[in-house]
Structure formats: structure tokens, C-alpha cells
Image (cartoon, rainbow, N blue to C red; front, side, top):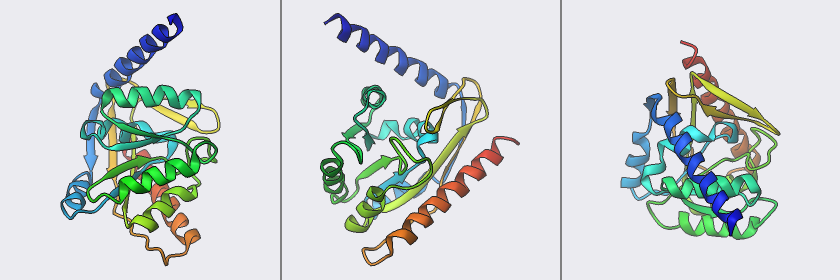
Amino acid sequence: MIKNVFYTIKVIIVTWLIRFFYKTNHWNIQGLEQIDELLKEGRSIIVASWHGQLLPTFMNLAKYGYYGLAGMHKDAELISQFGERIGWKLLRGSSSDRGKEVYLEMVKVLETPGSVVALTPDGPKGPARIPKPGVIRAAQKTGAVIIPAMGQSTKHWGFTNWDTFYIAKPFGRIEMIYGEPLYFSEDDDFKSCAETLRETLNALAETVDNSIKT
């Protein structure tokens, strides 16, 4: 009981701090209107960001009540509870734990027109910037459009494990870019699709990095 109380307090503190960090940044957002346009057409969308730069996308889209994907490990539990507090609906699982189940749950969501799922193609445990099959297979199976997204703050911390995970410091500027939609059909070669996604996200990351230096 006491352990649960302390954990709840931890989640509340983390939620407050991250909200503070991101709300005190000035946001420069490009391409967000594409999501609205696709939803008006009845398309379902997968928003894809690299794991290390997840938080700008996570914070920017929180108010819309979209679906997110979180793993089953300890850190993911904290992220999941934090995400639910700020407005996300979380699907839980990864390639190593509940992989098949969460994939089917994601497909079911995306088969509903006008749905949005945000995920990290290289999460939750890497290797960094190498897309796992789930995001490509789900897009091919459901016809969902992939919107690549990348953001970074001019002031940030980096925490390195298998990847460097960035958190914005307060009172900086966040450059946030939603790239051009990617369409993958079931007939497309998986390796080619994965390479296209990887190159697109890396190009966005480079553009964002260059933007925060100016």
C-alpha cells in the first residue's frame, strides 16, 4: 500500500515536471495540419518518431486522445501512467513481451477509420534508429498512413542507455516537424519500406538538429 502511494506520488511529480519543461518552451511546429487533413479523409494514421526524441511528439499530440504504444518494462510503466494522465490511450506490449497481442490490438484500432496511433519504430529497447517490423506490417495490413515526426529543444538533457533519450529543459525553443505522409501497400517490399522510413526519420532529425542551432 505504502509502495503504491509513493509510486503514485512519483508519477504525479514526473507529470508536473515534464509538463512544466515543455510548456515553458516556445514551439515552432511544421506540418501538423496534415494529420487533420488525412483524418477528414477518413484515413487512419501511424505517427512515428525515433525513441530518443519521442517526448516532443508525445507532448504535442497529448490533448487529442490518440493511442500510444508503450512496452512492459519498468520505465514503460511510468511512461504509460504519465501518458494516461496527459491524455493518451496506451496499448501495452513490445516485440519481446505481448508482441503478438499488442500488434493485433494496434491493427484493430487502425482498422477503425480516423484513428491515430503514435509509436517509436525502434523502441522500446532498440537497436536505435532501426525500424522493427510492427510499424511497417501494421501500415501495410490496414492501409494506415505513416506520418514521420521529429522534434528537439534548443535546451535539453540527454540520458544514455541503449539510446540517448532527450528531455527538454525549460525556457528553450522546440522545433517540431511532421514530415510528408508515407504510403505502404501489402505488395511493397518490407526491406524497402523499412529503409524509406529510416531515411525519412533520419533526414527529419538532421533538419531539426540544424534548426535548433540557428
